Length: 243
Image: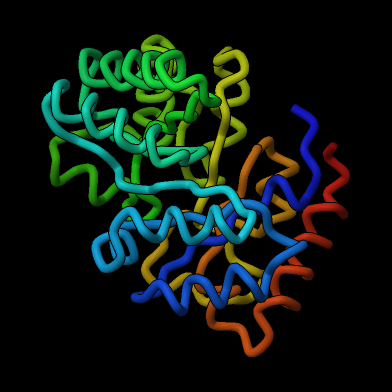
């Protein structure tokens, strides 16, 4: 997939209010095309935040990590489609039926309202977890093996892509998963603290390995000049030489 650096970079709006989110979208206008709305902001602002971002001319990645019985998840997918979001996350560990219902409701909503179909992204293993954490669940294999198996499930059920750490990208690219999109959080500039993330890489490294989209929050939001921080990331992505 040929994507420009501006298409690849997604900024996570991990802020508590609509006003702060709107200000950041305005500051990054012309550099960033898609913004991620997660649990904090969506809980604080509700669907209005999606409307606000779209009115500012940007796309929305709604990161709600849906995980429930198939009927409930399907209904939530329908409502997200009605809002006009571009990406929506579901947990791949929700299982085959849940994922298929999510896919079918996305298709149905697109056909019913004549709108672009929202793209579903399956969350594999959170980047805050590592092999030791999985042992607590009784999973004895390495993280990357579980990520590949969950990605296979996502592809088999019609999910458009998966969310994974950049450390699993190379293995996923070699796993014959077709055009499954790979979306990677856990992006940190060289030398920056990992904080609560455990499986991280730089933007350039992730793109060279095969990431389609990079999700970046704190390195931009906390920068003294968020616009310059975003520009530096875009330059790093461009320097990776992947179209």
